[in-house]
Image 1 (cartoon, rainbow, N blue to C red):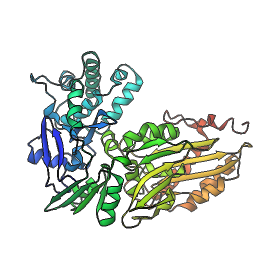
Image 2: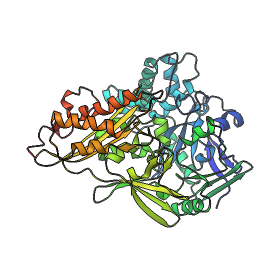
Image 3: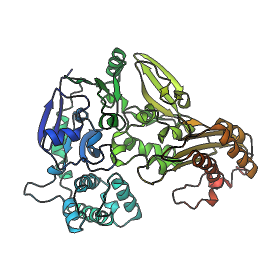
Image 4: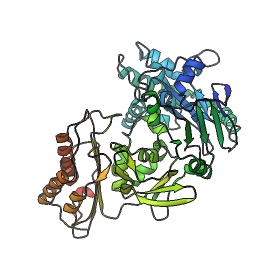
Length: 501
């Protein structure tokens, strides 16, 4: 067992042994390291002013991720390479191509948000497929997604996007400076990987970083009152907004055997509890293509780089976007306490607001999403005030399994934002099952939705709005030919050939 965390900031190696469990990377950088280029804006992971670059070895390769320093704890950096905006200049003082492009394209006015934008842009410039950003519509989408977690109040985004395109073109032709150091930085990080569990003690509390799932199970069984932290995108707000003290934190993502993600021989997708949304995204999109556009709207790039799929389930938010999607797909949750394991259907995990079917010392090992049955019609729709980085007012996820004669053999309708937990619309499912695709069937299911839910009114939406939208999303599923949205993928050839096999 090791008694300290080790990581690089720039070219300086740090060994830290006495860390308050809830000390954020932002506070440590600004208050203790005088790296004030990293700004404090919202302090909740929304504005991106605090964005920094974290490099880690993933399957033996150095990968850079932009993260929000305000909700990233210092101990999370164990074994990593951290870069802030102060690290971007070359040995001769030359600006990084992204910085120079921001100057050339007038991408900064007040400058407060600029370091965060620059770090997100540098993260994008290290991508191996950087050439795809030049002159393509997909390139525009990739840039917009990469910058969706950075807010600018004065310059506007057009010059910043132009700067990203210019920097990308330069890096494709002349190389990206950080990527040029890949061999050197990979070697220094490899030297930090000792595979040991870490235990940190300070007057404020302790942090356990288990190296394996066995070590995690033992630590949590010994102290069920400890707080499990995976990506910290939810727990971080407990610290920055609620000012909570966390006497004992047990990390989830340090358990290397929880990072497994693969498709089983039967077609089911396994996602371990340490897998982030960024890591899971290509697998989820391939497994649930109808959910692709909604999955890309979960949080921002910085949030998806830290947040885990199972953490999104475990915090049991009634407006979490992942659980309704996985619930509609028939997902099962794998739970463990010590050496005991059990499996529950995902919808059975959520009991009521703030209460889940989880025992003291029990944690999520992973989630298994079965393959969709042949003949499935799927739809996933998120309704929110903003397109990017916004909490859902209503999210509907639907899977209908069609029989050869065109009847609806099985219906799974799951909603978020309609109750104190994400849950299925059982009455509406019953109204659809065994019926043909007709206007009468649609009306019956819409009427049943009103019996399934009694939504609340809050700052995101009124109860009337939620009930109306929940019913109307079924129209979007039933009549995809009327949907002109570029974000709607037709399913089963818009239902036209279902009856003909």
